[in-house]
Amino acid sequence: MMGSIDDFWLRCRARLAPDDPGDRYRVRRIGNAQKLSESLLGLIISGEKTGLFSNPDEILPRPTAAEYFVFTDFGGRPRCAVRLLEARLIRFADVGPGETACESPAARDVTAWREIHGGYWRRMREAEGGSFSEDMLLLFQRFEVIYAEPPPAG
Image (cartoon, rainbow, N blue to C red; front, side, top):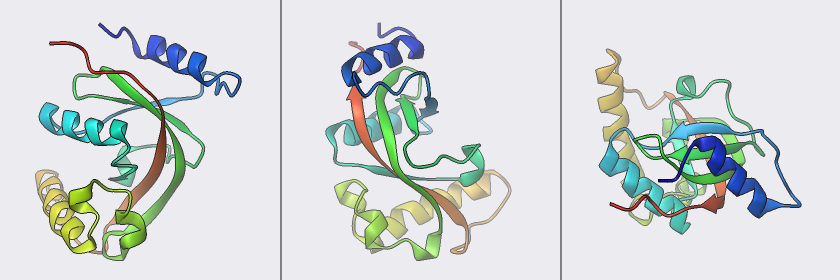
């Protein structure tokens, strides 16, 4: 068992010395289901996916560049720590190659990204009683993995 998020962060800090970021970190669960969580975390940890698009109202206060996050799986187990390189609001319609370059290989093409993420955001908005719009704001976050541990066995 990997232990608590605080224990995970202590192991991360030990690896980063002398550039120890201290106790300044936030926690974020990746994915809205276990299978998706494992898939996304695998891409993030391998370095194939270096960014996320989020609902800006779900991550408050809004993150800024140079912040640290511990990404957990769907069950809340810490899997990796990242340092944000960039965090900014962008309209869905304005997402272009500069943003999709951080996505997994299947979503790097802007047309593919719009199809995949348009469907996702449409489902999320409808589940909340809202509707999808190309004008909706997303929180774009580009990051680098600074520490990772393998998933728990079993």
